[in-house]
Image (cartoon, rainbow over all chains, first blue to last red; front, side, top):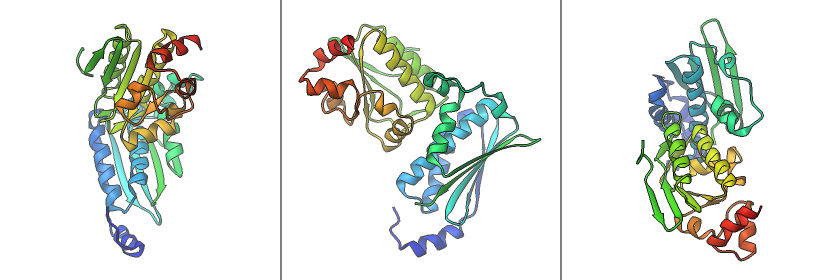
Length: 142
Length: 140
């Protein structure tokens, strides 16, 4: 893990270009590796990168499970945080069944994943548009 | 589909080894195999996630479902967890408070020391060994 002084890491992060990939359900392992590699390049700690990958995977899985067969991921540096934008062509928040009371059933419907993402990230923003759904995840660089 | 998750038996104890990564793509198979091994007569089932580096909510769901089934049978079910990402997901979902979780296979087989505040911890305070722990679980 890079142990350069914070100033150096911050400078390197500002120059890191956004990273994008499209994916289907079977590509989720690659989505995770792609996200983890990029988070490390952005100077995220191991623990932070783990949380980020966990959250991205949950939202990405929901996108291809309930939204559309193919979805897109865009990773970007913000001021002191990293963002992941997951876009699909569906309206998955509407497609998901209502949140059940039973914890076991929550996972099956995708609700456990959403809860995990909200716990792991500072911000989870879901936008339903004409073209589909966009979920923005924001995590501070720690 | 048998054999996706290898199972080892020692008497009435079984160890089932889960895949390196568990997500929506394979969680259904994992769930099926967990339930199948429970139906196989184990009194203690150790779910070996020591080499599992990632577990999505779908995997947590599979493990929770097995835990629910085990509790009803009753069969003692314990998790052996090694990787940080898996421990983190179990923490975020509160699963580590529901299922007895151990940092190694040996610890999970022995039932000591317990890591969570579940029945495993109480059993250890009572000085019970693995065989008796199954009885304690039955009595709860």
